[in-house]
Length: 498
Image (cartoon, rainbow, N blue to C red; front, side):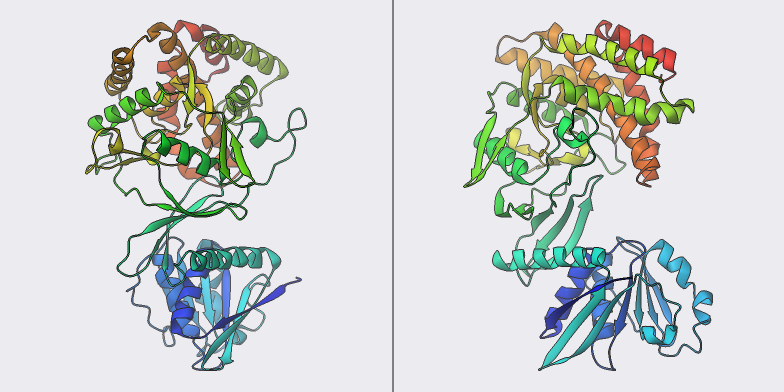
């Protein structure tokens, strides 16, 4: 396999520690890192930095596995550390479980030359040697791995330009997209959040020459996040402050709003916090929001409309993915024609309902509870880069039928009533129009989510989302009771969706 080489100076042990953190940030199951170099070149030092970063524990004990040959570690990705200095024969590697270790996680190997031809050809080799008073690392790997490595080194450079070159990086979370988040912290200083959002590549055209991401108006860079964050803050809502930005590379340093959410220790909704979030939505929906936002010289954002194309393409995830899963058959052209007709009738109703800023994923993973604050500042907002101008009821449905946790019918009604009371207290409010839009958007959103969760399992190998399907089906049944959804309800019953 054709590979490339990258050379990196490591002038001191701190540089090796930072390089280990930078490597750990990109490692994924199946990665094999072969560490080469003479005795005393820092192979174990680098391995220790990688393993501590993967575990998120800077004090993690990482002894050299010289005598045991292999040590296993838990963390963001499971990792095993092999030291083959005392290996008698490459044949012993299978007994040591090398193949299983590669399948399950990350493998770090010291003295890889003793493995002969037993190591995978797609491994990344890091050769350490002396350079002045320090060390140098020569990394030889396939282009795909080096692309990841160059990305994480660019992040370190971005941190250095922001005065955080020596900061500790710790993985925070990733989501179903390519986005990833880290905490970045200097000793004694406040933590900030690194948003790592590579530009989203367009997929294949699927309709009218456009890929799904363009039809559904999904953000393809960090520019929309910055635009919406600054606009929300300008209107007095609690979105993260942007400390530094590389808009071209898709890197942001943003305020850390905290870790406390709206769920209790058993991952159950805390009613007070959900009701406060509903009241915040009511305040947002009283505002007039711009459709064009200037971000920086040369960068602006036009907030898309939640148009029929976007609404429809999202509901079609149900026929594309969920329907085959639940029925064991693909949808027929007749099914699709009836499906489009039923949803067209529902979307006709939406044309007459209120429009506002739709954050799009306003539910428990994206709401930060700030108990020290007052009023709407108690509710911190994140993950709004895909925001649109559309039916304001959408975010209320997203909150009251939280896709990640069970919101019982009683609490759902309380959330909706809290929102409506706040709207009515502020002036004229079309309750009947809202109720219809709420039901339609709840059904539309849950149709989309059923399809997405099955797709994440079937296409992306992420089965953990399947556990949510019964709850989402239950939400769907609640929404479909509304008369505005009678055609959709009848069709879903015939197709076996509910």
